[in-house]
Amino acid sequence: LNFLRFMAAFTLKKFGLWAGAFATLVGGMVITGWLGDIPVLKSLSSGLVPIKFNAGLSFLAIGLSLMGFSHFERPSRLIRGLGVFLALLPFVIGTGTLVEYFRGVDLGIDQLFFAEKDGGATPGRMPFTSGLNFFVAGMALLILWLAPSFASLSQILGFFLAAVGLIGIIGYSLGLQSIYGLGRFAQISLASVFTFMVAGFGISVNRQTLSWQWRSLKTKILLTIPPCKGG
View 1 (spheres, rainbow, N blue to C red):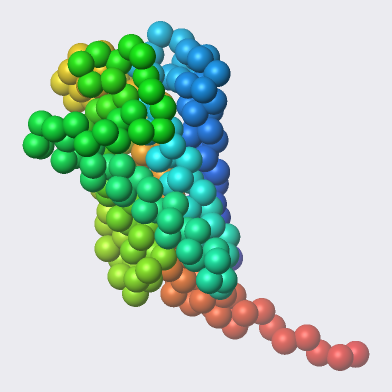
View 2: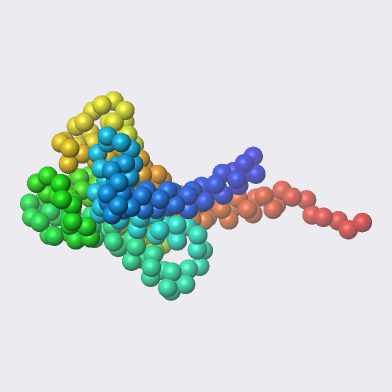
């Protein structure tokens, strides 16, 4: 039983790395889709709502930051700085997007990195839910990098992110458009909600919140192994 728990903890600790790799892949494909004008890569499926360029960039940053945090047990100052910068990017983009929705203003961030030609009344602007999710994801990663003692708060934010993604998937499955948005340019894409769910779980099972379980289980495993006797 202890061995199974040990393997479960090991798998969960690695899930953060896998989740980060998935978000990085999604973000990279979306950016490639916009730069190369490849519709299927913009939405990651034909006929679905495209993922905005800023969202793709934010997914890429979240994935790389999460991968770095999950991989490096004792990151150098350079790695930590890069991880913080990558976490700060979706946080700033998400915050700016929320301000645009709440205040009804254009801060110029929607087309800062890529000028979208056909995007409705607010070209390049991601859905409100995406902005909120990137704000939450960025905050959670900043906590992990800068204040690991508050990793439990980061875990809560990660579960919130995963829950929002799961609700979006349910909305798509049941055809409830009111759950994942209104209108072609306001609704969050299916690929986005799935990526948010994966990234949220990856943030929640980070090495900080599982470290105590990891050490405890390793100790129990070692105690159950009988010592070797010379012959």
